[in-house]
Image (cartoon, rainbow, N blue to C red; front, side):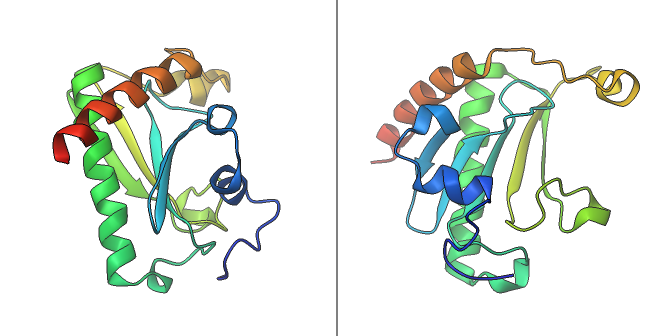
Length: 154
């Protein structure tokens, strides 16, 4: 599936075109990508970077967009490291429902801070998502860290 913003029901397309970044937890918009918090995070600070283009296939993205996607992940990892001091990160794409994509029509790259001993058992056993930090608080903290990081790159 490819196109511009034809995915009217797509949460990523809606977030990208929204005038209210706080309501969608959108962190930034670049030329070809944008970043936002995951509304159902596995851990505090769980973010995503997505192409502006509404597509589900990695093969549909050209080199400059792929580079911008990875540079976005790099910036988020730097900021999340500063804020949360995780022991590591999961960074990845779930391509297709069989691979675990909850929203398979719009490709997105997950950046998930991880700590030794953390677990996803609550989700598996209790079918309950535990938010270790209020999403609005995560959003404010990340925006401040992004501002400092991007200012240092200028």
